[in-house]
Amino acid sequence: MSRDDIKECLRERIEKAKQWNVSDFGEIQAKRAIMEPILDCLEWDTSNPGEVRLEYPTPSGDRVDYALLKGGDPVALLEAKKPGESLDNPHYVEQILKYAFQKGVPLAILSNGVEWSFYLPLEKGDWETRKFYSIDLNAQGIDSVCDTFVEFLSKDNVMSGAALESAKDKLDRQKREIRIRQTLPEAWKGIITEPNESLVQLLIEETERRCGFKPDESQVKTFLKKPVKETLPVAQPKIHNRQRVSGERFVLPVDLRLHKKYGGRKFRAVTVTNNEIRLEIDGEPHTLNEGALLCMRTISPHVRSVDAWTWWKCIHPKTGKEVLIDVLRKE
Image (cartoon, rainbow, N blue to C red):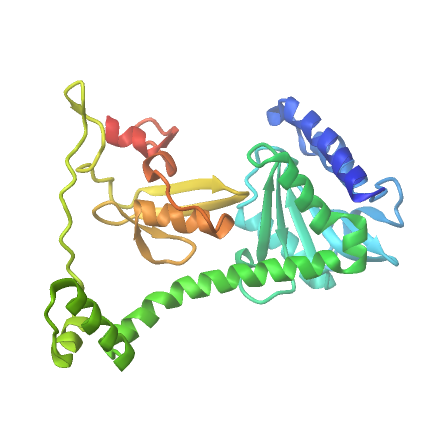
């Protein structure tokens, strides 16, 4: 099949799966109704044991649901779970990656039918950092989902090694992004702690341009070594029907765990103080909005703004239900 034919096949299968209530599916039903048809669309013949091996044995004596074979050797392993099972379960992740690592298989997938997590088991780092992409059939656009399946799991791309190269490139870009975000504050701290002459001259000229007076170098260097204190207008809370609804003075409880699924990835954070949060992806404190933007930009680099109150979710401390944090500040 051509790429367009493969995508059309995938589109039909995915649209059909999205119409079903899969919450009562067991693992076997999910495999037969969702996973195997998707593999078939990607040109894997699931009825051919020389191409797709079911219940593939591992060195430890366990079995993996599917092994995609090339010349009798596995080039990818797929472990299935029933719909609703969390793919973030550390046991599931460790299980499939250990299987793949033991056999030297470069590509591993964990799926509950609706969600698909893609890993590079042979890369360095802990298990979770080896994940390079996630798919959610319900949350993501169908064209994006089809393109991703073709790129990383089509028979032609897996057999040729193109899928592996694309996966490595994606994982490398993710690691670079995280490392850059972690290093930027250190780099900036170094610049203002030991400012170079170019920065000093730039600030001297800009200060003179703005106020007409030229500061001396020692004054600028002293300033750069101190935290910047910026005077900002005080935002007034918006009033509607005599009730404050903007939440400027509301402070979230400390140690409240926040989460959000976006672009096939699940982001997590925990509140610290004054509506600051610590992100799981970099371990650094951020404001609510800064944290949400950082998460979004790992998927969509050009995103410019976000309303964090309607982006982050949490488990309500009293009801135990999943809610937007905006619900807490309006109560």
